[in-house]
Amino acid sequence: MTISFEVRRKIMHVFLGVVIVFLIYYDILEFWMSLSLLLSGILISLISRKKSVPIISVFLMKYDRPEHFETPGKGVISIFSSISVLLLFMESGVITKNVVLASLMIWSFGDSTAAVFGKIYGRNSFIFSKKSLEGTVAGIIAATIGALFFVPIYAAFPAALLVMIIEGLENVFFKRPIDDNILVPLLAASIISFIL
Image 1 (cartoon, one colour):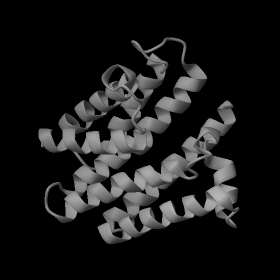
Image 2 (image 1 turned 90 degrees about the vertical axis):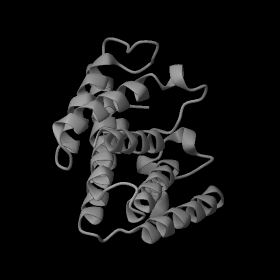
Image 3 (image 1 turned 135 degrees about the horizontal axis):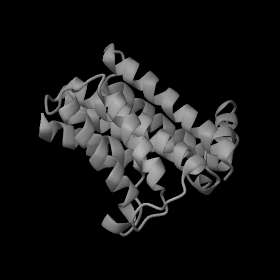
Image 4 (image 1 turned 30 degrees about the vertical axis):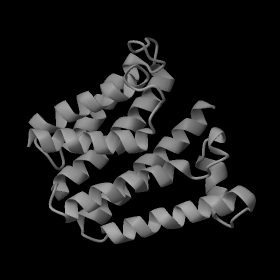
């Protein structure tokens, strides 16, 4: 995977994250819509395994990882799984809108920055991990800044720090890697909710 491909993917990652945050902030995206998008995405993924779907196939070629060939659009499906869970919890009163928004900013900015910065500037491996220390630190900073739009520093920084460290060490904590589009937002929301 080339650096330009990964940068292009992560720019789309940030763009999608910001659009989702905007839609939730202004009460446009609700649980039922997110669930509908998730189910539609699963259906389109199943169809895309067999046939080329106009427009969708262009996006898949430009942004989908080659190893996701068996599950086209896996990243979008997994983030909408997380968004659906977060919105269900928000609409049920379990967590607040600001917790949802901050956790999505941690996912969008932290994960993208860590990946790009690590690929370009990473020289030192993070403890027991393939991920770089430089990328992890950059991800913590970016995730904290993103979360600060919605929660105070005493919640934003610890959540960003713990999430990025756990993501960096996921092979130590888990037998199989967990999709960061699921791990990061749900873990961030849990930590922020616990602190607040």
